[in-house]
Image (cartoon, rainbow, N blue to C red):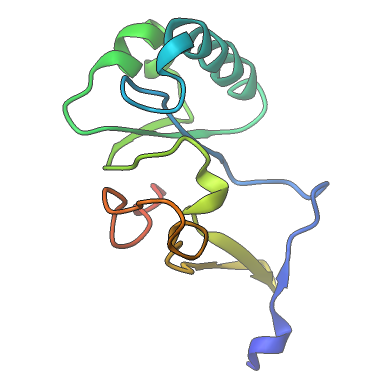
Length: 131
C-alpha cells in the first residue's frame, strides 16, 4: 500500500472517540479552573451519549475522577494518566489518517510553535489509545 492511499477523515465521518485533556491547576485555565472543569464535565457527559471519550489526566491528579463522579464509570469512558502542559490536544495529539476501514495515527512531535513555547513536560509520544 502506498502512503498516498491514506487520507484525513472528513469532519462529518463517524469518530471512534473524542480525545480530551482535563484542565488542571497550573494550566492556562488556572484563573477560572472550577468553571472550566464544570464545562468539561458537561461536555464529557453529553459526548458519552454519542461516542466514547478518552480523557487525559495528569498522573496523581484525582480531580477529573472526583469532578466526574459516576460519569467516570460510564461505558465508553477511558482515563489515561499522562503528563501534558496544555489542554489543546490538537497541538500534540495524534493526527489520524484513514484507508480501507483502518486508521493510522501520526505523531508530529509538536515543538511549541517552532520553540516559541516551552513544551518540555509533554510526553515523548502520544498515549496509547484504549481498545
